[in-house]
Length: 351
Ligand code: TXA
Ligand code: MG
Image (cartoon, rainbow, N blue to C red):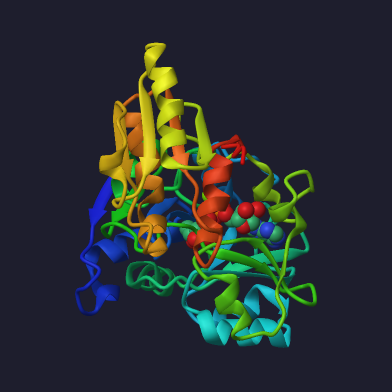
């Protein structure tokens, strides 16, 4: 299959009448799958009402069938066809954060939605993305749009059209290139069928922000205790993994440098993941700065690109600094821990 790349300037007026947007919307109406930018990461979009479109999404990504998809809507009216119940907490969260990087798990309305999109569950995850191109396409095609991140399952999520092309060229009908995404990590997933609501996946909207709107928000135990079974099916899989073994290092920079030196002495090509503040302090084959530590939003925004660059530069081992799990730092550490397969090396201070 020839994958078309449709370039769109997200800042033009009247996006809905732009020919590339029309083309993408028509492909979706024909139950083809199209990658498009959202404010978090690129998504692989398909008609959420059609089993055939959903099968195309799962097979292009190589995604396990028991991992349900997020349904994206362009306006509040579309919600009525998808969910059967919206709690007061959910209403408050939608009002505060939609459109935006927040996904709410709600009771599913049985009817038009493909059962495969929701992996046969009685709940459905819904979000309204805050990206002019995604919104224009959803409004134009007038369909609920299922869209997982547009990466090959297991790989880092794509934050540019180039990443999508590298993973899915030849497997999908088109990629709408609207430039790099902004947030860089996926939406926060909150289960609103429980009281209090539970964060199933940390993401672009922080726990602190949620708690400004509703008093209590719980966290899925599996996010704290790595042995517990996650409530969100997708959270049980290894994800975001670079090709080389990746270790998070908790300790001083000299300790991290020492680990790198030992492996370099054994002839291995070493990568170090740090930030702008400290990139000049390390010596290794590849030292990559992922944003600025003093601005965790910039770290989130560059995270997946940095993991992908290590693959391009073919290192044998990667050592990465840890980040404080505060604000978007929670999502950063969640993704980095998954990328590392929970491999953490801790410096032991003998004092
Ligand atoms: O920012 C995002 O959320 C991006 C963009 C494209 O919108 N999408 C995304 O989708 O990250 P995906 O498929 O990569 O992640 C969806 C997550 C998975 O962990 C999945 O298990 C969970 O949402 N999920 C979907 N439906 C669910 C449900 N009914 N109950 C619990 N978790 C659900
Ligand atoms: Mg994903």
